[in-house]
Amino acid sequence: MSVVEQYARAHIVTEADEPTDGDAVPVVLRYDPDADPRAVRIGLPGPHEWTFSRTLLEQGLRAPAGDGEVRVWPCGRVQAVVEFHSAHGVAVVQFETKTLLRFLRRTYTAAPVAG
Image (cartoon, rainbow, N blue to C red; front, top):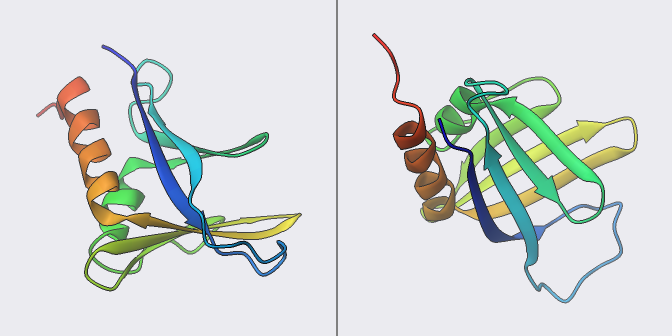
């Protein structure tokens, strides 16, 4: 199986950060079925990478999902929010929904669901 890596742009909306001019930042969406066929990773600028359930990402595009370190929910008709909690605070990242859907489609193509 092949690794799926997709570069995207997202807006980080975190109160702990200094206000930005609204420019999108580069992020990396990654799926490695050999490492964990049920997980996806999102890499933010700097050494910040989060690994969480692919199902959580999929569910969160339709309705609020998650109750631990990662939460995902739709935001309007064309955007989705992924919220990451850590000992250092909370990072709220806003994506275009179509970007996350494209990534999910690619992950299912790389590793078809068995059964």
